[in-house]
Amino acid sequence: MSARLEGGALIVTIGSARRVLLVVGALGFVVVSALLIAFGSLLARIVGVAGVLTFGTFLVVGVVQIARGPSQLVLTPEWLRWDAGARGRQVPWDEVVRVDRWQHNRQTVLAIHVARPEQVHRSLGSQLLARANHALGAGDVNVPLNHLAVDGDLLHSIVALCAREPDARASVASEATVRRLQA
Image (cartoon, rainbow, N blue to C red):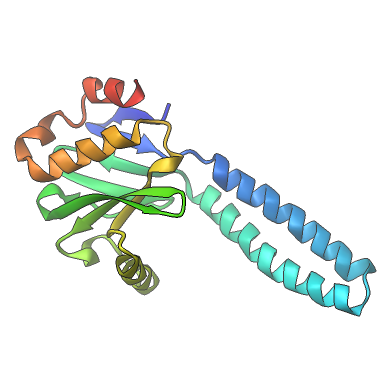
């Protein structure tokens, strides 16, 4: 189940299957690259070292993401929060200025723009990545809709409605919302 109620909040969780596939794929490429280093010619060894460095990095990133925990969008009547593995910062609904659907290649993202982006981004690296996202057209909070097991169009509508209409926020964390998202 990827949408649930917990402690007065609606929690929509992103599936971890793609992360696991990333780790398994990276591990496979690291093994093949190591075999090139062990048994290949000079050129094959150079390619092997490049492969171990590249795919080893992907492997470490994937394992760290899995270890940090699930990515989830948390919605309450007062605020929203994007937990990308680690717990994110709470953004009051009144700070949300725009909610868009953004598409790049075949990925659709729920792009949430906030009045003060520093509310969302903690580290310098996160702030620099946020600027790059803005240059591409995405928001301050970016939720990958393709990775959800709920209706992405409906989630977009719910978040946009809560951002626009303060009265709609009271019912965001309800059984009715969970049932609609999972239908």
